[in-house]
Length: 116
Image 1 (cartoon, rainbow, N blue to C red):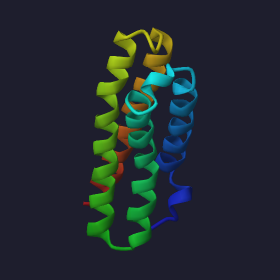
Image 2: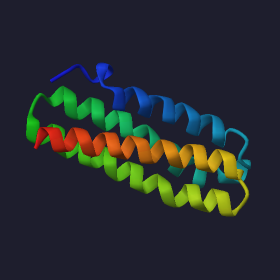
Image 3: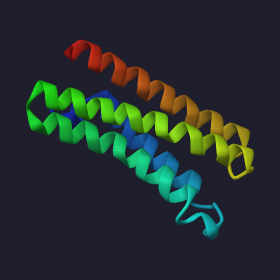
Image 4: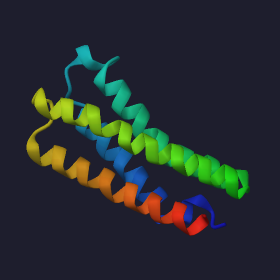
């Protein structure tokens, strides 16, 4: 197994987390324990689970953590849509973030399939 830092999906998910933090910086402070917290935690969970699963050095464990990372991708879609509907994200930002989630999910699916 390659070191997780060499995985393109991990690198892209790190970039995605950075984009999420930047996108939520200007959200109202009233959302600090609501949407901001939920989106940031779910986003950070993606590369964290990729790294943890890879570090376990067990294929079944790795697969489980990759599936958890994929679940975090799905988790982000709902609050992102809510943010768009509340005009906390403009259409361009929403589409960029949503495209990032789609790309990372596809990469995770490919990695999962290659390990099964």
